[in-house]
Image 1 (tube, rainbow, N blue to C red):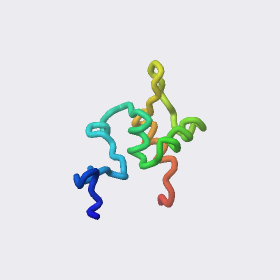
Image 2: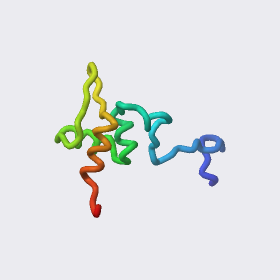
Image 3: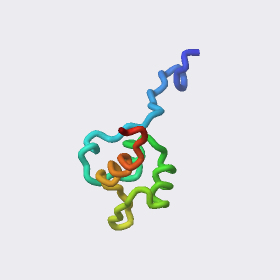
Image 4: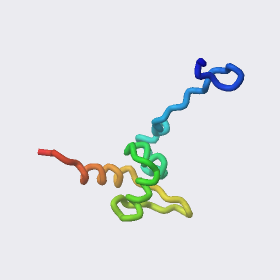
Length: 83
């Protein structure tokens, strides 16, 4: 077996690691999936961080976003081994 798809067609290449969408590194607001990708955490972990208030959230209409500055502040406040 060559690991191909149906009827001998090659399997599509699926990445197991999500990558942030192009251009989101300069965006002021990230969606929860974008926030999770940038921090390399699961969406569930991202939602847990928001639920316990570890990361500030911004709501616009019915949608939830994380400001890039808030994500960076969270990462800085959780650094270990700094001198």
